[in-house]
Length: 326
Image (cartoon, rainbow, N blue to C red):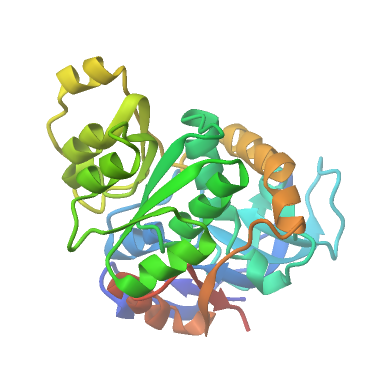
């Protein structure tokens, strides 16, 4: 088969479409013939040499895919060859074939085509596990999403609105904020021109956000704490703004706040399978009913993954950038 390889870390040009051995499913795994994958920030970090795959995972980039099951390993039930699926991966999605633990496989939701489904597993599992399973967003509460026009952001807006929450977002352009509003965002903050702490406080009558989904890390830590409501929960999922910052414990104590930081890729298979099961139970019906949908900015050939990485690094996209396998 062919896949995107990374012979040496570097810029987008480090991504090389090359022939590699076909993977074979082991016990508890299925082999998926890939239709499409999607670009995530973690893929960019891996390409740059900053985010190695977890032990035992494929060295190829790609944390999600869609396609058809081509073979089934021993001990797998509930799936058949030919099933159209999407899957959460620890790596290997930028390829014509990939093996994945059966517990991390999902059926293509009703109403979506096979390519669209590639935009779902990583963002839905990230949002559901952090905003709902960890931070326990409830109806009537306010969620602040940084990077509201990203793949994560566009999904977080829709899921929060689906459960009856109010949503605030930050983004860097008028166009991106308008797209967030179309998806249901109530409070729109241009982070280049406005202070999100002041804007969220004003929009909530001084209360602040009950839950914040943050991809920035260190750069926003102090302001996120100030933007939290009493009993607020800050869920950190990225370090685009750095990894080290001072934490004001006094502010946390005064607000009875909680700060969590989670990653998805390196979790044990059992944990990822539990998240996938929860997503299938709670989110897949919303997709089938049309209440939630993947937002796809564009599709590019998988062999031109370098161009796709440039798009994501320039942050001009809205939603997900897909890589379509030949």
